[in-house]
Image 1 (cartoon, rainbow, N blue to C red):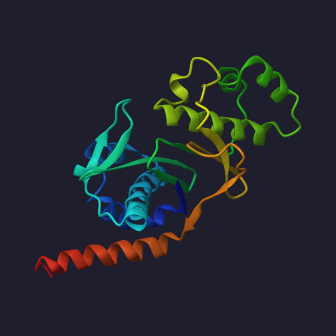
Image 2 (cartoon, rainbow, N blue to C red):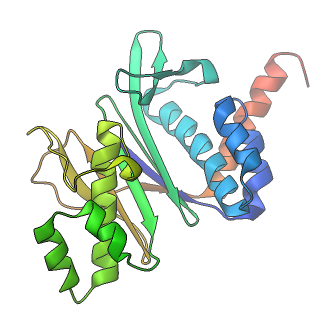
Length: 228
């Protein structure tokens, strides 16, 4: 499993959008165009650029839109020739978290806001909710619990919106772990990992460096086709 983290503000929106065009699915591009929040549009584009770069870095594969397929449970993945790559992405605030693996996985990152009692009742079992109500760090605990729950659901192919009960049963070979991120955020990953592992670290990628690498590669491909 490989985890990657990047941060961008709207000043990068145009460059990231251009860099994402070769790989971003049409439906996601349409959502970006409808989105009125510049920071969200920026992170949507960044997630696609970071994902394509990560697959190239780890697997040596250059992705296109045609490589994205839908798995048995409706989860998107990449299929290149005979190779299948599972991935999951999440963004919140100015950060994007991307995970890739040969096995199903789910990742989630959330910027801290206010803790929400209504949501807590929905995603927590009664005993968990009772412990949370008495916690001296309710906000942090709320978002830590949220990301753990969301990553489990995304591993399964669902999301918080479709959660009816507060718990998802995982097979013995699958576990959930926190991902170390900056203060003010919580993050987690669910996948085929040893339960003895503690918090995991994502490789943090500078957006300027990422864009320089991607733009240089795209320009090289453009020139190689005699279009310079």
